[in-house]
Amino acid sequence: MIIGDLLASRVLDHDGGGLGHVVDVRLALELRDDDADPETGDDVPLSQGALRSDLVGQAEVVGLLVSPHNGGSFLGYERTGVRSPWMIASLMRRMHRGTFLVAWEQVEQIEEGTITLAQGFDRLDPSLH
Image (cartoon, rainbow, N blue to C red; front, top):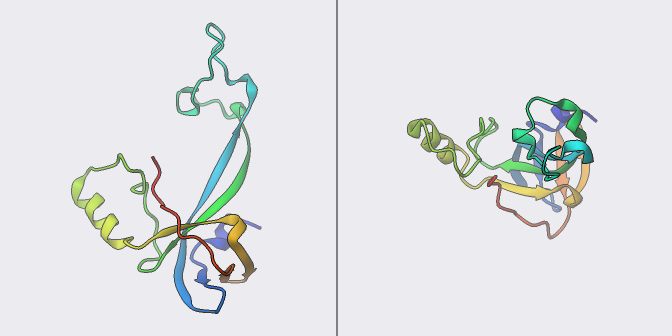
């Protein structure tokens, strides 16, 4: 499966009720053990590890961001520290109000253009800290 196949898919609850559309896919990146600072031995955050793609292993899907109001991207404004330009940040928060994260394990079925969630799925906070 390609991530692009999930984006913009309609999301339904277990009973077929509409919840919105997939606006993003949340991934967890595997960091390799050789990412330690050679002088101190401490792990170096990926963001400070220069542009070394060899530090990154496989990516794993951990969840889907579902928006009931808008099918467009967050453009990075799901990060809690992003506040400017304020007008765009404010607009994006308004457009994506009600958006939630659903864990990948709670996806019950994937068909072309439609994703059905398991009964009793959890609506998780979509923010990135």
